[in-house]
Each structure stands twice: as structure tokens, then as C-alpha cells.
Image 1 (cartoon, rainbow, N blue to C red):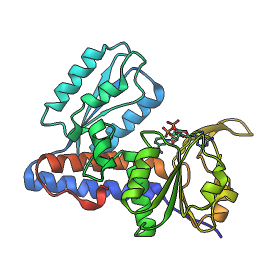
Image 2: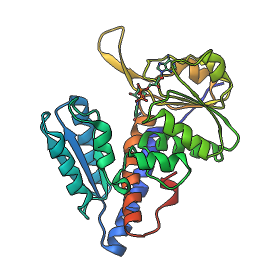
Image 3: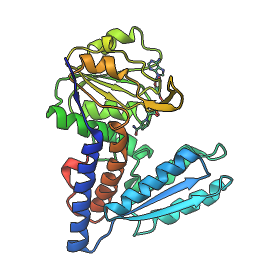
Image 4: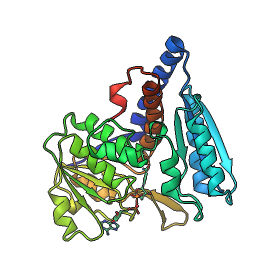
Length: 297
Ligand code: NAD
């Protein structure tokens, strides 16, 4: 079997197009422009790249982008004060604090200071609880992007066996909650799981979110299963330089799977598209305007 490639880049462009249409309508009908504030503390090069592309895409869909760059030694009090200011700013509908933060800052405290309704990353403890109890919440962007791709590919996910490899708070756990919400039978596998290959072999849907290059080989994949590869790992090429690979061994998995997301060009582009979708959702909720249903969980 040769797997269908789930083109996350094209899907993300469509999602951004839909967000842009809704943003234009919000402006025309309600004179509202959604605003996303991104806070970056320090000069981590990867974070700077992410923040730049988030800002560019925010503006491209017609939203306001507010970037706050703080020194690496910014005090916790100053950061919390900035978040409170953004919480109270009616121009700001979404707040994202770029992680990781420098070691002297308490990440949990910082995230939980964001107003839950503006927490477009979906990491605030209230949103985690709402998602866990099946209530309307802000949903973490990467798992939301995975869910959108799975729904588009399969239609209904009801009754499917799903195995999520990885139990992090930002990917694995919320992914499992979302799949459960769509009535999958969900297993969360992790570093202590016994006989991981056998666990993965029973899955109709495999979501790999481990951070270990190419660790899932094709012979773990049930023929015809869907593989969603969240991993982003940089490895050395044999002829020099580096390249990005996922947590799945793409070639062998693509030979067995029914569908697979490539790395790059799969889950990655969906993450920023979902951040913009979440900012739109937050804006609609803040203004009691119906939110677009297909852009959230
Ligand atoms: P993490 O390090 O927080 O969690 C990794 C999880 O994998 C842990 O729960 C651990 O139990 C599990 N694990 C580790 N070794 C294992 C093993 N041998 N067998 C089974 N499970 C094992 O990582 P994370 O933040 O969840 O990210 C996972 C990957 O996804 C990373 O490569 C990261 O770069 C990538 N990522 C991509 C996006 C995106 O936009 N595409 C977003 C977030 C994370």
C-alpha cells in the first residue's frame, strides 16, 4: 500500500484563508479587528523565528499583531504586569507567551495569569479542565491542527482505535482528550509503555509526539492506518548539513499506512493556522458573535 500524503501546508493555507474571510466579515459587519499579542522573553533564536512568522501570518489574515519583546533578565513581576495589561486591553483578543521561558520565570504562574478566554495556546489550567470535561475551551493549537486533519481525512472518527505516543501537556494529553471527544478508543503510550510496537499495531490512528527522530518504523503500523507525525527533529545528513525528520520513519510508514503527514509540511504549518483560528474564536466569543464551527474542536 502507498499512503495518501496529508498535505498540512495546503490545508493550513485553506484554514488561514477561511480565517481571513471571517476577519474581513467581522470588520465589515461589526467594525472589529481581532488582535493577537505575542510576548517573547529573551533571545532564543528558534523562538525569535516562530514569533516573526506568527506576527507575519497574523497580519496576513487581517488581524492586528502586537509583539512584546522583553529582555532575558526581565523580572517575573514585570512580565505578570504586562500580561495583566494585555488581559485588560480590549484591542487584544489573544495572548501567547512564547515558551520556553528563561529559568528564573515560573511558567505555570505566567500561563495561569493569562485571562483564560484570551489564552489562545489553550495551556491555562481552566482551559485544560474545560477540555478534559468536554466543555467549550481554548484548545492547544498543535493537537487542534491534528484533529482537523484527521476529521478532514476520515469524516467521523467514532469508534476508531487511536494511539497517542507521548504524554506531554502541550501535545500528547490534549490530543488524547480531543480524540476521546470524537469518540475514539484512546491509548496514551509513553516512555514506560510495555511492548510499544504491539500497542501501536492495534491503532487505526497513530499520533507520534515523542521528539525522537524516526523512532516509529513501518512494521509497527497496521496496514491502512493513519499516521500523524508531530515530531520535528533535526538530524545530520550523510553528505553534510542537516534536515528535518519526524518521529515516524517516513518511508517505511508510508509503505504500510493508509495516510501519513510528512515532516516538514504536515502538522507544523497547521499549528500557526490554528493559533489564528483560536484568536478568531476568542474574538467571536468576546463579542457574542457566532464562531465558525469548523475552526475549533
Ligand atoms: P515532550 O518531550 O514534552 O514529550 C515527549 C513524550 O514522549 C513524553 O511524554 C515521553 O513520555 C514520551 N517518550 C519519550 N521517549 C519515549 C519512548 N522511547 N517511547 C515512547 N514514548 C516516549 O515533547 P512534546 O513537547 O510533546 O513534543 C514532541 C515532539 O513534537 C517534539 O519533536 C516537538 O519538537 C514536536 N512538536 C511539534 C509541534 C508542531 O507544531 N509540529 C508542536 C509541538 C511539539
